[in-house]
Image 1 (cartoon, rainbow, N blue to C red):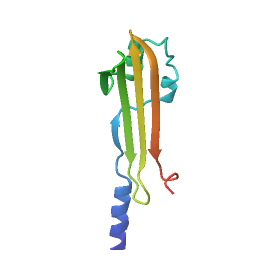
Image 2: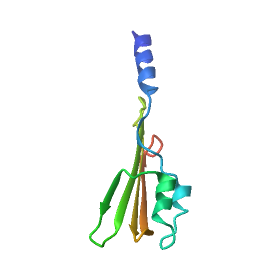
Image 3: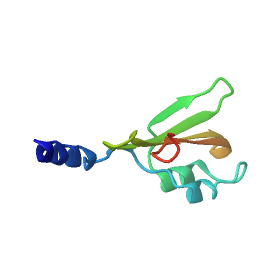
Image 4: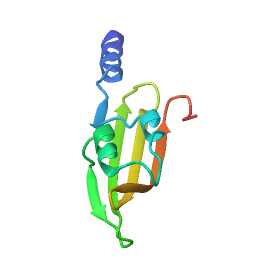
Length: 109
């Protein structure tokens, strides 16, 4: 019985990660220069956004998101969330926001 519990725990702990979206690399984000980088360049680097909308200021807002959760049976699951918002006007990046959030087994104490 003890062996069965160990085997089940092992397989639950080795489950595949749950991933939504495409990873957003900080190195690519750092290449964007507000007032200079063209809108098409953002799409070349990051692909089509998960969401595209017009703001009240007449800007186009591109939203990219990435979420990854890696199951662990001995502690909280490791979670990584990235959100990248790019605001463009006239085909040029005006500003952007890059947010990183996460819970991992070392930080969840």
